[in-house]
Image (tube, rainbow, N blue to C red; front, side, top):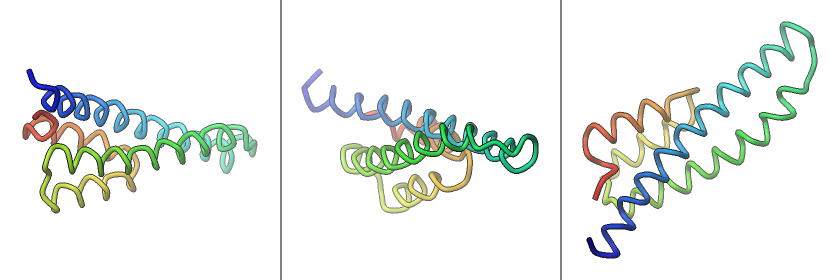
Length: 106
């Protein structure tokens, strides 16, 4: 296994972890918003998950751009990866799709 192959498989694993973490932070933020606006009118959930989700969103976009370059995704795949960061939990769908198509492996 060459150094470049190890790096490519590594970026696939990193992308997978960040995609799942971004989706979980989305879920946490949505639950926090539900409690803030519907249940108890308390901002603690949004205060906690807002910055976490923001950081993971930016990290996901950066890792998607890096993965696109290192794994040689076409423009359509990159656009779908970036779009997947917007709807809640869609990064998991994209990660599963990319893994099934072999786009996370070198």
